[in-house]
Image (cartoon, rainbow, N blue to C red):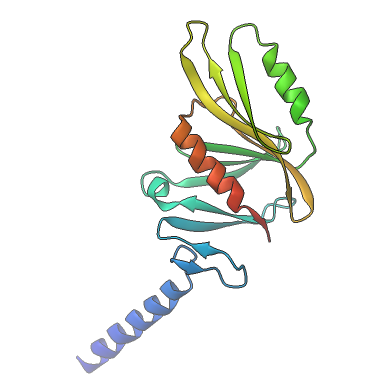
Length: 176
């Protein structure tokens, strides 16, 4: 009986120590200087060329697991949570203006662009009947001195609220 009690106390102590170092706990991130909110989880990405961290919302992760995968055939890192959160991070300098120009030549969709920073755009696609189809983002980012092109998945159909969540995550990315 005494041995079982010591075992349980030791097990609880180990669990409490482990929880203290979890990266999804509210407070500052050790050595990082950032603050995590109660709805934040820190993910560390170790894929060569993409050594960085990103803060993702726990409320999304509670329903669907986060997937962070490098697609070798397309040459980009994909960060996704279900159908409502999908980012592509490309380790390259891509001409944002050329991407915008190419979309404006689309024969089916109409795209409306809003400049939200240097070489960064929010845009929405509109169907021929005038209905907004989806909200998207694309932009050039310097992360730890390295250039990256980050965009929402072109195949996704995101709402304005979903886009805001993804842009918040993009803003949290830091080089490791």
